[in-house]
Every structure is written in structure tokens, then in C-alpha cells.
Length: 555
Ligand SMILES: [Zn+2]
Image (cartoon, rainbow, N blue to C red):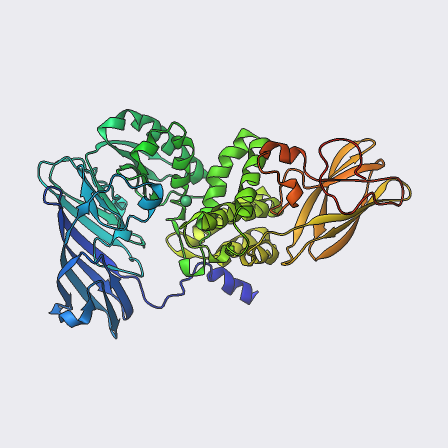
């Protein structure tokens, strides 16, 4: 029991010995002159610290405890420090902003790591290195933004709760200064300034959190604002009731001048053309809202793998399909499998090694496979323990970094089960399991069926549904395959005529090649491979798997 108590206490405990610094950052952004000037002060703990910035950024001064650091102490793109005691570090810098490249497509925009300006926008995501920032992330921060007088502006940043000293400053005035506070750890500071019309709505969640939902839309799409506010408010209320209290003081939906779909704490940047698509409020917006719990609320310990896209894909994207009905849900599972199987052999990665979507191969694993694995976990432990695990994970890990191991531990504590087999093989394997029925033999009395099952390496622990057609109708049973080979006996109310493995693809696996016609997506589920059973004692066949949907046994 002592060990268990220690484990519970260790849920989402940090592995880092250096405390992330707190920051006070102030910038003046001149959209006419296309440049930025800034100053930042960090409170650093003893230990190692690494700062980096965009190569175009010009450092004017760096002071450690108010003493100027010599130029030789840093490279053009960074600074390393090892401190024996806590210290204050201050930077002054200026940065010319590159022209905003409106021709970037979605893929290029994901990698748009230059600070840019144009068309009244300043594009300043944290990854663009627009301020000298610690690679460890920030303990908390305040950001003061000043922009050119006379220009219409909105800062797409977020603010801390008023109780924590923050301001809920709607930033739609002209040429003024706005301060945003984020009283939680953060990966970095994202800032977008643009010619926005701001709309806000105050809501109270089921957990009692009061927040503003806001849209920063350009005049061209201002008419869409109320639909987005309605959808975001409903989604925040729904997930707050399901998981636990919404974690930030605002949620801002910001029209991005690039075709992005980014989710930051309390904020999402969606491309203006994306926002015009009628299905986005119910789909992409829901995904980004949920990232405020998974990814931005509980943050990802990237060194140990990214679980957040899978959990968000499951609880947002898949949930929409599940509500449409079992066929839409099955089609989504099939789509995940097909995407995974489209990755050439040897080019896939283990789920544990997924960090971020850099290309389709990684997305297939980090989004689709991860979502499917967590969906199977929900089936295994049941909806009630699943929900308790999510609430426990949220309560223990919010504003901390979490790994797959933390997620597993939260569900183990909620379900009272050891769940190694629900995580470990799925995280480690680069391929999908290949369960097969190799023989199906009817019992002598006609009321039973012996199934010979096999799977290749690596072995997964599979709880497989089988559909059996009998003289009295069709029924579903479940069989366990946790080794390479297994033989299971089933009892039946009437003589078996045929059996098929997991016809609705509820277990993540690679169906036999014959079961994967290239185009017949819908036909596939209807025509999952079937095994046909003869009269007493004999297996009908043990090689061919594909039955073209007809009734006659294969030769
Ligand atoms: Zn996502």
C-alpha cells in the first residue's frame, strides 16, 4: 500500500530539476515600420538554462543581476547559462519583421517559424522566436503589448483570472497598451495582432468557472462571430461538465492570416478561409476547444511522447462521428486503419515516438492510432471508469506535464485494474496486430465451435468480437487472444454456419489484404472476411479469407 500511495502522489510529477523561469515581457510592435522592440526579464532558479531566438533578432543588451554579459557569452541565436544561485536575467532586443507570406499553404504555415507582418497583421507565434525565450518553457508570464497609434489592433493573447491579478482586457482599442497575464506554466508566448472586430460573451461553466469567449474576426467574416461564440460556449460547457473545470480566464477564436489550425492555452488561431467553412464550428473548433484540457491544460512531456492528439481526436473528432451513429463511427475507425496501412513498411513510427504532426506518417500514428488505442481502453474499463480516469487525470495533472505513463496510471487508479497490456504493446509496436482465425471446427453435438486463432509479432493482448451465424440467427461473442496462438471453445444455441472476426473493426488491427479493397470503403465492413463452418468435426478451409458476401462456403 505504501508503494501505491507513493505512485499516486507521483502522478504528473516533474522530471526536471530546473524550475521554469517566470517572465515579464514588454513589446512595442510597429506595423508601419515592420519592426518590433522588446524587453524581457526572467527570474531564474539555480541550474541550467538555455535561451534561443530567431536569427534575425538583434540583442541590444543582456544583463545578469544587472551586470552586462559580454557579447562572447552568447551565439547569434542563443545563450546557455549554468547558475549556482537564483538570478535575474534581462534582455533588450529589436527585430525586423519579414513580409507576411499570404501564399503559404497549410503545411507550410505549420512550419512558418518567422516573425512576420503584413496586411495589418503581426504574426508572432512562440515558435517564431520573436522574443529571447527559455527552451524549458515558462513558469508563468505577463505580456504587455503596445502597437502603432492609429492602427486598429487586437492582441490575440489571453489573460489570467482577475483573482490572480490578471486583466480581462479586450484589446480592440487603437494604439494603446494591453497587458495579458498567464498565471500558469506555458510553452511560450503566442501573439497575433490584426485588424479585428472583437466580440465577447461571458459564460459560467457547470463547474462554476466564469470566462469570456471571444472572437477576433476580420470585418469580412464578422457575421460568423455569433455562430462561433454559440458553438464554443456549448463545447466549453460540455467538456467542463465531463472532465472538470475549464482552466483559463478566456477563450479567444482568432482569425489567422495564414491557413493554420493552432491551439494555444485559452486561444485558437484558425485561418480565415477555414473559418468560412460551415462545418468548422462543429469539428475543428471542438478539437481546439478540447486542447485546452489536453495539451494546453495538462501539458505534454514531449521527451516521453505526445498523448494529447490521440485523446483530443477521440473525444472531439470521433465523438462527432459516434453521435452520428454506429456506421459513421465504424467508418472513422476504418479510416484510421486505412491511413495507418497506407504508410510504407519500415516508415512507420512507434506511438511512443510521436511528438508532433510533421508529416502524414506521423499523424497517422499520433492521431488515428492513439485515438483508437484510447477508444479500446474505454471499451475495456467501461464508460464509468473511463470518465473517472479522465477527471482524475485532469485534477492531478492540470498545469503540469504528463506522459503516457501518467495517463495509464490515472486510468489504473480509476478502474482498479493493471493496464499494461492496454498501453505497452500499442505504444511500442510499429505495426498493427494481425489476428486471424486459422481454423473453425464445429463441435460433434453441433452446439459448439472451436476457433483456432493466431497473430504475428509483436504479440498484443486482444479481446476480439466474433460474429457467428447459426441456424437460429446471428450472435456476437468475445474471444481473447493474448499469445501468438490460441484455441477457444464457444457454446452456441444452434449449429454454426459461419463465423467472422470483428466485423465492425472495433479492435485496431491489420485485416488481411483481401479484406482491404482499395476503394470499397463501405463494402469492406459489410464483407469482412468470414469463415464457414461445416457439419460436425470438420473445418471448411484454412487459407482463403475473403468471402464475397455470398452465402456459399468457399471451396
Ligand atoms: Zn490537435
